[in-house]
Length: 254
Image: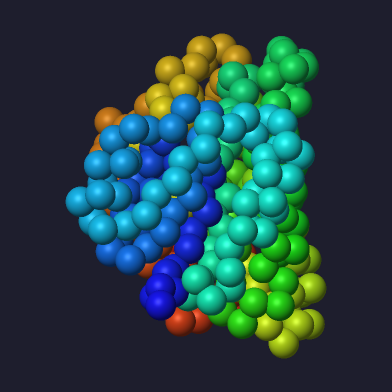
């Protein structure tokens, strides 16, 4: 008889925080489905060395309906008895060039909104529908940002996406709390991390992005977490016994 394994679905798994979380989630006996536009072949080596099971999908989350449909169908082939716990981590995000929204390409803006908000909503729906009635613990972790809670000039699309993700999580947590076996839901700000997104912000033109110097100073002042350090903090929150007690959380808070 197969021993039930913890199962995690993770988006944006090939770069930055997502890649670091994927590597750290690949522990002995764990199963990970990693979604990214360009899967990372080195994760297969991490999985093999750790004794974990890895599946990677090359997907475009700017077309989230197709991915959500595929995810729900994928779950149909899994017996609940094969799973010890099920977790969805909505991590993928897309940053439009910093600056006023009037200068943002409409197609790029639409993609950022779909990847950052529409995709998490549709994937969460697919995850909850597919695991409805499972008796194992289920968790939804949405990776948010301080910019979902505090507005910043030159970042209106990203602020909107993260604020929407926060409020979606609040409402979803209320729905799930009405069920005897509802999923635990948290929208988590992961701190300030030295990723490609940070490179884009501190490399922006100060004439169109007035906060550029602040982001450059965070880098020069050593105020940024590495992706590995940030991933460890995020996964520590995910593994806490009281996960879900507060649907809006920050790794920098107790």
